[in-house]
Amino acid sequence: MTAAGELRPSGHNPWLIAFVVSIATFMEVLDISIANVALRHIAGSVSASYDQATWILTSYLIANAVILPLSGWLSTVIGRKRFYMQCVGLFTASSLLCGLAWNLNWLILFRVLQGLGGGGLAPSEQSILADAFAPEKRGQAFAVYGVAVVVAPTIGPTLGGLLTDYASWNWIFFINVPMGLLSLLLVSSLVREPRRSPRPLRRGVDFIGFILVALGLGCLEIVLDEGQRNDWFQSNFIIIFAVIAAISLLALIPWELSRSNPIVDVRLLGRRQFGTCFLVMLIVGVVLFSTIQLMPQLVQNEFGYTATLAGLSLSPGGFATMLLMPVAGYLTGKVQPKYLIAGGFAVLALSMWHLTGLNGDITFSYAVWARIYTAVALPFLFIPITTASYHGLSGADTNQAAGLINVARNLGGSIGVASIQTVLQQRQQFHQSRLVENTVPSDIHYQVAVHKAIEFLTSSGASVVDAMQQANALIMTTIMKQATLLSYIDAFWILTVVSILAIPAAFILRPTTLGKQPMAH
Image (cartoon, rainbow, N blue to C red; front, side):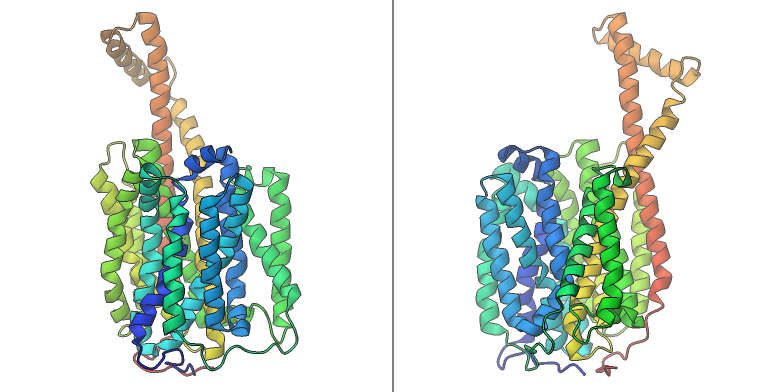
């Protein structure tokens, strides 16, 4: 049974601890999305192409993916508070170095260090909250923490756009430094080690397990992040890394099951409660990160929004999430998690369906409200899933559970972004070919469109010959825009179906004893 209060020092309010441990994760999750809008500026500053600069994002995600499943084991062995503060320190120092980086190679190296430090933060914080609060209060505690995890990716593009447009890209990294130092100061004063850790190693370090995790998740992240740019399995580069990832992850399961002190406790995934939570959190990651990628990309590329304006279209959704977090936290202690999760996916499906109504004349308010509808669902997914994932676990398992549930969210995000970008490209080509089929001289609609375009261009001063050439070019540009818009509609239809299919998965969860301490098994 989890000993609630083990981490709560005498005289310190546990809600203050919940706020304190959320500071660093807010900055870490923010960093995942904040660099996206500044990538072209960074590429120009370090004399690199855009494709080369994408490794600034990829390197961070790879390091994050590698350390996340290991963080539970490291917390137990090193000591949770000690490991957490080391992660904050590494994240803060590497953020400073990223801002000072003098070329692309060093920036990528510092981003790897930043990803290693940042990856250990969220699991440590979740296990701290799981131990510091009784089960009936965990939902409300995770509501405070959930603001950091769910809202940070939403305001990341806005903040990144503002800093890039009005200061310089370096400041997207420099802003982490004062927040990291504040976090170190507060954590050192308010948080204590639980009595049960650190745990001495009984049979040494599971080096084989470490290598398999690093190779499996690291190579998988490379495949997901670079697959679209390298034409997926038409590239030998992608094939090699996909094979390494598959072999490593398949070998990891029997290896870790045979260890008495595994570096990743894969047995947790075999439990009905935790395994289901892992699955639904994976789906939340798919939809959450896909929409965070799609909406700014849509309004910037197709409607000419600046980076700042694109970010501002997402920000009201972040405020909606903040307002509903306490409500979701309260309801998590009163209503079975499976009902809240099913309801959250239903709302998410409706919000994705709303986005299938895109057209070429959408307004800024349409983009804002579309994001708000999505944001309404997130608290009723994130908090119940996180809370339910600890139900029935002993205190010794909370570190491992926290690491794996964060792997699910981040892995789902990588799968979602990679898949949705592939869908966009393939469906754009499909729609373009279908629309071009009708652009033949014998088609009456095509003749009318050409005639109107020529009339408009000649009335603007163009010669008849130039007007005919420009008219054809104008029609092709219109076709390209229509094909692109239709591909976005297809992408949102797919996310609608994914959200609907996730609803039955929620009902696999076991009922929890609301308001009481669950027994471990």
